[in-house]
Image (cartoon, rainbow, N blue to C red; front, top):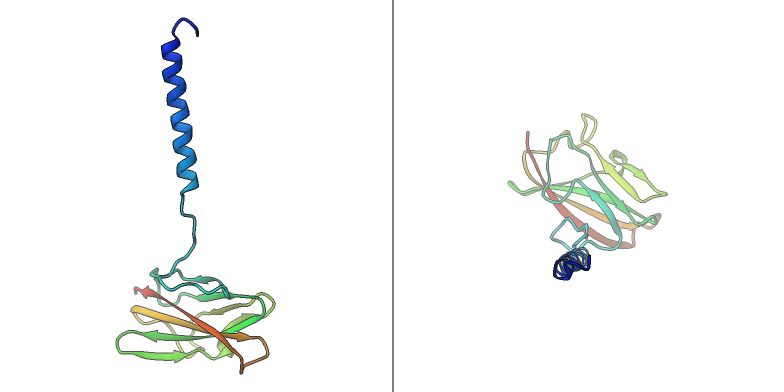
Length: 145
């Protein structure tokens, strides 16, 4: 090792530089999970499908709200502008976790999402208090047949 101190210094310096670059890249990595151009309110913990996802016409949509909230979906198509509210009795609601899910079937108002851009809005409020409007969140996805 002491026969070639210059080689030891070069190898040591190179290894040090590699460690520093790895530390910098890990520290500056963006690990955010924001999947929409709209700022996601803290009441909305998760939603699917992701913003801009390409999905089949019979895909499920779901939102995981804060545990003390419940929400109702409104589905809007871009052309022509047509919005359809989804009644709560056509959604699966888990009150203990704040999860709301809708899947189009033959027994629901929407039997399948139309081809093209679909906007989803969830209007949420405190459980047991329809009068207290807590807020809403909107995102979109694309349906391909």
